[in-house]
Image (cartoon, rainbow, N blue to C red; front, side, top):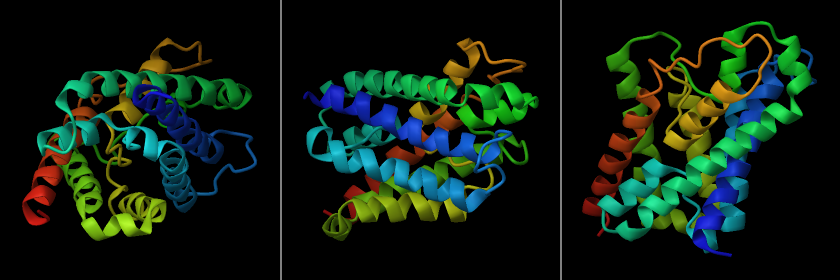
Length: 231
């Protein structure tokens, strides 16, 4: 298996499990409906943990264009592989989102609120404020990449990755839904735009740049800070 295929499949699994968890919590008629934020944050942490355990030794288990770019900026990843990784990550995210829609189609049909439907696929602000929303994504992704730069963290393996994603979601996710990953947001948002979802509304393209630009900036800052402190 090539690293690119590992990133594609790993990102597809990440979105299938992560967006699937959101669908289970917020769509009408599911057995998990209304189970709340803790279920969502835990579900996303596990959604990152599982493919990282499967593909970490093959591709590095990035599944995140911002993380890939940040590592390249810090000299910890081959820049020549960045375009291929990003393409694989976005493609995998789209496929994962499609599978979530396929599995939960009946529940999408029962959910009449377009905002709830979009919320399965992509993030959005609790309070819309461009500057503060952007800062939220920068800080959240900075923490992600900086924490993963800590040398001692690797001794805990996938559990450390799980803990990092969980604490970011619980502590920092309430403002924008903590995309902290451009593929996680944009890939499923594109899927929302093209899939024949009953009663769907706008894909909110006016906001879509924030969970792309914010994570990239935060990841570069986090990777460079980690490289400077932990030489």
